[in-house]
Image (cartoon, rainbow over all chains, first blue to last red; front, side, top):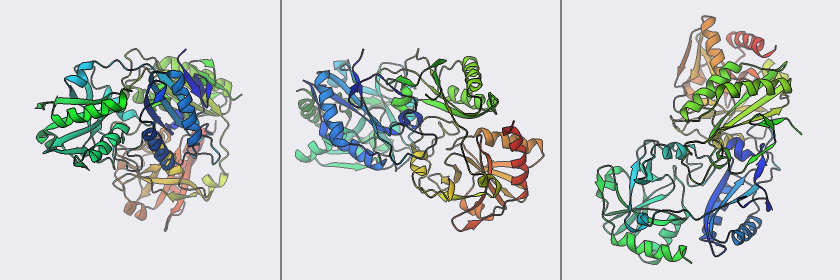
Length: 272
Length: 272
């Protein structure tokens, strides 16, 4: 049996009346675990905490942190997925005022991404599925992920390691399971996520690294025209770090020096 | 234990790796059951089938129908909730090509709505939560329902039996768990649901009734200005039928003759 815990106890099944199932009423985090430690864990906790506040989930954060650390200890090396739901529901959307959030932990192996993704770079599939604009949920890693499911269903060709998602208005937002950065004239640019998109832990880490390294960086609205003029493009997440992007559709980029520099810094954070 | 089945067998817990929990990757239907029969059941099946097609869920519809009918027989009288998910996931958004959808049935008692809601009518709470525009998911009763959870959390005052939801652009779309109709100059008007909203079974039934009764009816974009000019307003769903709407904010309406006529016809469908 794969390792999984519910509310601190080994369990691999949960109540059918859980509101995570009924409405996607909850949040999740996916952490890399090495040597029994969850990596970039404070950033994961910070995002979880912000999400719980936005959804008014009455989550016991210190308890959640302790449980995750114990679980990571058991996992040793791999990926730890934490799902937090509002807990059991009665009929209807109104959350019971005394609802107790449920904590679900699942372990998986380290993903076997080809080393070429990081070394030589990847090409992006150009997704037709657009992200809806919903400022109330933007940035959160919540459980309503049908847009990502639809987008990821658009391609099977393994030549594309990731897909690019735009919003309904055509702005570039993110990858299906990554955030996106571009470099233009030595400035690091990444999409503003106030209308949609997931504010990734690695994205936050890269913005913090940029500040520490005195690289100018901006969050702003970006379009295909900006991508066309970019000097470098890369995608990132907290499991694989950084993958240089070689191209999308008719556009092509070299793997640039800023991408390599950040990739080197990030690798240090993930290879302990 | 409350009655619940998973894939035709009595069970009240499901695998934590189910994609319904992970991503809200699935659909649901809530049916009234009387004398062991699910009511308006063909319309529920039609919507489920359309949703499964849109999400590329490989659902065995005849099997699902048989299971629902057997389950309703056990329930006797109450509410039957069917959830269909894409089944177990491996890591990542890409659905496994051989994923087997999971069928989850849960029973609940008949809801105890005050009779006054149907007799005298209700007032609507004016929700601040706006619906995002996502044509790819519009109309479906899918499991991504955080917008409804947020909207329903906006009020606790029992004076409001339902809340009105608009989209990001300000169009009137629906109630949190109902569809909305208005009457103007003898014409039945209901919001167009091609950008967002749930295409309710009772909404479809009312549009069919209107056609049969030679009442003119239109689906179109509607705004607060239209509501202001309406002669009658009502909300509907497949569990309670029709509730006249008396007002929202500073607006007020009488309970009108078309509302009463449709209410009478619908009552015949739900009181067997």
